[in-house]
Length: 66
Image 1 (spheres, rainbow, N blue to C red):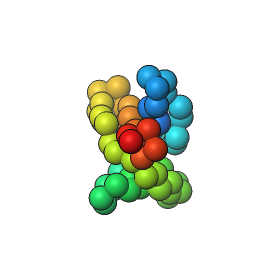
Image 2 (image 1 turned 135 degrees about the vertical axis):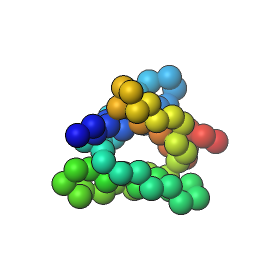
Image 3 (image 1 turned 90 degrees about the vertical axis):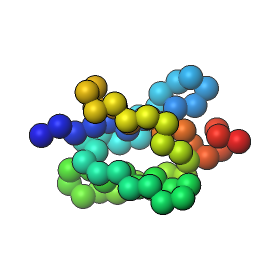
């Protein structure tokens, strides 16, 4: 099973948001991450990249996007 780690990217630095991400849902400016146990985290921002080879998700939070 390939699961990813999600990071908030701001000012060129990565801050961990969630590990073992199994699902991503995007609606407008809201991203919902779900991990393998079903826990969810909702982030206001934009999806910058998803690297399926390295299992890395990068998210820019809404306040950094302004």
